[in-house]
Length: 314
Image 1 (cartoon, rainbow, N blue to C red):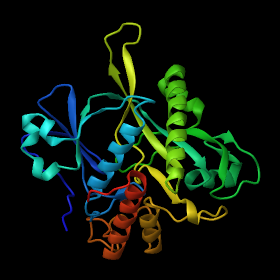
Image 2 (tube, helix red, strand yellow):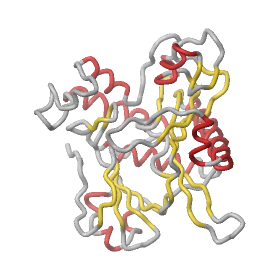
Image 3 (tube, rainbow, N blue to C red):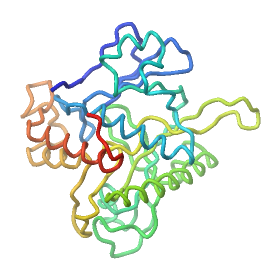
Image 4 (tube, one colour):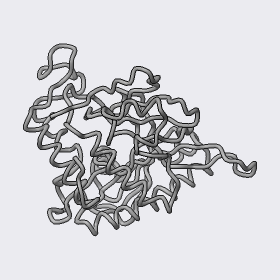
């Protein structure tokens, strides 16, 4: 079973290495190459071993959603067909096929655009203390994983690798990016979530919450010199919480198709922040995922892709 933890494209310039994606410059000045590795992170820590074919599964589901939701907002995808990419990229077809996207360059908007439809995760933790979500007052007496009266837009900061994103109030996000752009992103994010959650529901899945990322690209008009587009990944199990509809019972944590399975194993194995390098990993090399957890994680990703797209190509 092949696992690609690090792409190796020596004739291209590596611009960025994230938790999952390696981003390269290409001979095309307007485009970047995104390569989805099989790395996996939890609690902002990249685990030492990856999940076989995870990058291909993430790419498959992102491409599905980018196509399905393009009527709401354009996105950065140019092509996922390596044969249609520049010559300097095509030479690496064997390594990157199925896990690469040629995308438009964009100026990244410096907030995470999170939409929550259910009370879970950090929102549930905050609500228990203050009856708010990102500082936004909520009805009293809500229970864990309850569906919210209406989906809410809850921004966070974009943290550097190894650091935590920070939940922020709408007022703080407005200060960071300006009122008009904040309003546009909020409205579009809610529209994307509504469309995606309705489709997911029809496929037997609850989309509890998700994270969008946006960028700005130049236009040819002076009246609107920049256009907002979707970037990065879209509605994958890495950026979204998916629950099986048939097993949904509010008032407790849910069976999940996202990384919660891995997070639960980590916590059960004694992982805490500050213990990234032990005791399950060799000193300085991070934690190792047990093989049954590797396979269980992959199966959950595959099942989510199959339910949403009707097929799995890996």
